[in-house]
Image (tube, rainbow, N blue to C red):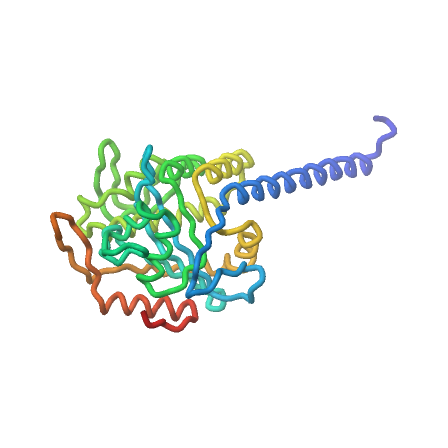
Length: 308
């Protein structure tokens, strides 16, 4: 070491750090790409009678997503416990998020009669859910992202929990949820977003909690610093998430749309009525409110309302 000057040592350390950084970045890239390939499921989705084009070949324009929280069961496709439509406008740098009550009474695409909107997943999976929601809201929906609720628990635990502002004190089984800022584990978050019977706002209160937890997950994931946490999150995503987004489209969105996610407006149905038909409980939307929400989303997507 006697012939080693401090400059050589500095250069050696810098070289080691640079090599390590390159290896680490390559690992991140290959891991994320591998995960994206695993969760990708090509879907022949029709949007306003046209095939969806990859985002990377478009000019920068508004885009829409359907988020499905799926409660799958053994030997049963299950139901879409959560249905949220997200529209993103990169020009105004804004995002709108609309929760659809799971018991909403709607025409089911490809079926001869109306039913609860979350049954569309049980009847025809992601494809039928996409067509049903798109027809119901009269907007084009470009992409679908489905999450198995079992993975929801693991994802939050991998993020070391999430923090939300709770507006209603309540208890579910052994879990206590006081008002104010609360930290949630995966199991606590699952019970938190599922509770509705003790909420004076019923399913609407649950929808708001779902959106709070969803935003908390996005914010926490964006701030991840641990390599091990990234690996665990990517493994969970690979096992429990499915989407028609390709890896290139994900990169395009991350590069061009991320600023639009900083300002999120929450929308919801508020004026509908509960009705029991043939001993089954349904939620009937108010036609005027539905038309108003359709218009808001259409304008946000810079689309003209179509005549159904």
